[in-house]
Image (cartoon, rainbow, N blue to C red):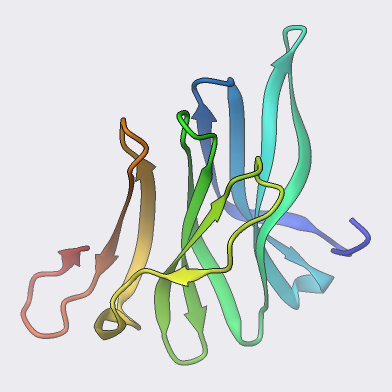
Length: 155
């Protein structure tokens, strides 16, 4: 908490479960430093002696609110590998795009953000969902406003 003074969960709660380990994962948006910074965090929850409790919060990403706003995050757990995956919409002062992150160590550390939406869609995307298939394949979908014809798209 010392690194994140004034830490407070703010919105968009999502949960997933690793069916092999029984670990539940909460993922949400948070603010700190009086709202001058924002971020995405995860917390592991599990049952112990019949009681459910959450562990420490792990940070996926942080940003300075004046220039970057992280929104609409989604999380999924891969029960085969134990990996966790998060996607979100990253808004900057001039555009937005879909970012993707991976953790291979139980949420403690995360890959750098990787933009997965097409550059031509930048500024017109929102609401990503990441999921894992039965063989560990990772899928992501999101909404994209069509800039040429009338119908919008799922990518």
